[in-house]
Image (cartoon, rainbow, N blue to C red; front, side, top):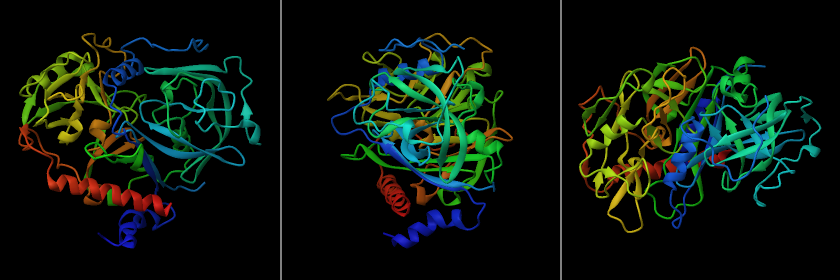
Length: 465
């Protein structure tokens, strides 16, 4: 194993060379323990509600909403529940109070549970506004806001306070102080969500933290980037594992190799929307519907990958032994001993998804059939054409396999191949010559060594910070 000093040099020194370099924030991930499995139906419903395919199914009755110098930072990320979600740390208030928040490029609001929350888990860290001298409650008549998610909702009142992440500060950031929270929306040490999409879709009608930094000239470049680690396939993972690095204000060149392929946003900035132009399964091209049906939200806050009924069915029709799930509506199963290799293109190269990420595990305990990670988002009813909403939602199933860069101006999302230091990933291809077959077999030793390197290097990053 490389000496710790060398590992730190590889990952961090490029970011500290000059004052204007980006800040890289180590991430953590929540890992599913051995007695906990991913709730596929619940995850699918959450995603359908988030993007307008289904009505909320809340367990609480919530009222609807009434109406410096350029720099960059690397922020540690935590991986929760075996790649289910990724969060980072921020502070709020004067003096600062520290909290963990889900990093979500599929939404635009910042919210935190506070001391008045009557339905929050007792162990959840909560914000105490009475201890912040910079806290300002909103005097607006429309300050009561509810935000609905597929797995529940949050409700509270608007306020402003000083928010800091990775050394960047917005002194009067608008956020929602949450006093009601449906059960199981968050767990562990997470206290809220930081939305990283554009202000056009903000339920609080505020400017997201990252966008305020960008508009205020605080960032070296108007970019943020992610390296997300993988725990899936590891034995006995902890609930929270090192999850990668979130970079505000640029990229970390030690985490990717080759060029970053940027694709311009397919619509006016709201979600981070690209147009899915192609897919292959085992090197075989699959016809993907073009136009509005191809609109794809690139969403770090989503675990799986969902798409329109016809296109998802076409993908699974190419997988030997696949069949619609009899347990989880909208999902497909396939023989567990098979490896399913899918690649996606958004206008240029085809980016491969590891067969590990395509397999969510046995559909039921002891079953020889496993559930796939690509599911029918629309269940036969696509979003009305021209609404600007996505028909595909591309979550961490895909994003763990690339270095992803979100650029504000000109608005685009870019992907690059992961470096060996970041655990490595399959090389992108020009199309059907990608050598990514669907076949039987165990995970390769090389892939396993990549996963070990990933955990080692993220741990070094977190130790430094």
